[in-house]
Length: 102
Image 1: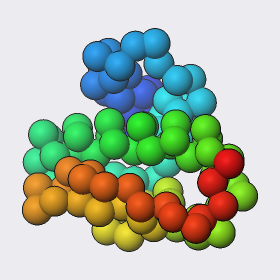
Image 2: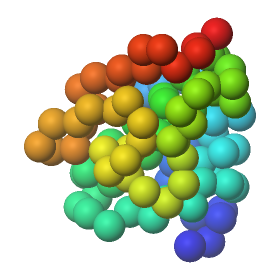
Image 3: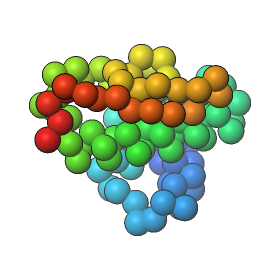
Image 4: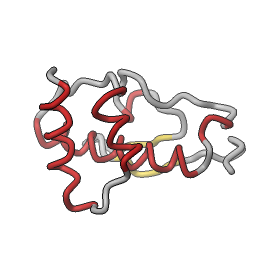
């Protein structure tokens, strides 16, 4: 996917969440390797979830977590450590107990 198209799409989805976190937006647009596989609505929600979870990761010094199973090409509901989703792949719970959060 064209990085400019990806950045523009993600930025438009996040307009309701202004001001944008530049680090999280740059990660989504330039580093994250996830590619949507499902409907546009589900994929759009995944972009927003990934953005919010990246902000949480940064805010809690995620690089020092014991279990760092976040990011990469998989969906947040398909293996990110501590993420619990519903049947519609919406994040319901984040359980990071005993994970060295700062």
